[in-house]
Length: 399
Image (cartoon, rainbow, N blue to C red; front, side, top):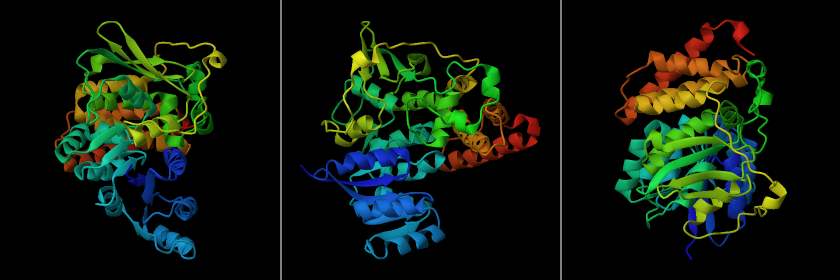
């Protein structure tokens, strides 16, 4: 068994932490080549001391100087670099076999695409890479002979329920529908009045999963599920009409595949990201992830509900964007990132997140998105439009 050299993009986030927990359980299988983080330098330094990577990448020069200082005594051999170009370098380095793409948001697209072009085994936790540039990513993987393995719990569940070839390509020819499950988040049963007054801490209090604040807000608005619908379209090559969403508060069934003969295959497990991470890291093998066994008798009841598109308009906006074309998915993602950022900063109300996204889509309808440069240009424009819309709102709309 050969050892996989791993680059972990986004080492200090929740996915990064879970990935390193699995890696630490299997030192005979995995070796860390590079760790990256944005500005959580103390945490990254501790991870570098423990996992001894060859390289570390941070956001800017000042952060790089600080990290070098912190590692000078205990891991001076680690080469510390900074910036977007360095992220792409460690994602495509010749000595790297596997790249865990766990940078949150549009910032993860460039290094993810670099890994795809270099033919790496990509463990995709950054859904925005496919939302923004699904066609380019899949084309790069196909041309380079790489592998793209989904890490999102929902897509990994579908992946496990589909027939696959040696290149991890799924056969959906006999599939009627893919069904993504959603927990419903902290406001599943909340009134519109309560949601209108929601605070960032309330929105980030997910009932089942431990996630970063941006993803937690996306879960609370159901935008996370909307982005996953778009991601599923690219990962599995199905139309929007063949993708459904059901609300499943227990988060035990992680998603389902409905076949044309009426069979429905579901993947179940604890709501613990180490399960899909271990699945992707070891595919097609299985390894221990450190996750406690699922006791269905203790769970007792599994329930399923239709999503409420009135209280959670972000989910409908995502379906609309998928139908409108690639430009709309790019604008949707960018506008959402700005709106969530403003909400977390206390400058936008929770329900106004959807308003900012809708206004951005209306303003940019039909924009070009036919190259990587056009994608980044549209992403930047959408961020400006969303920010301008939010700045024009009365302060009473903010939380």
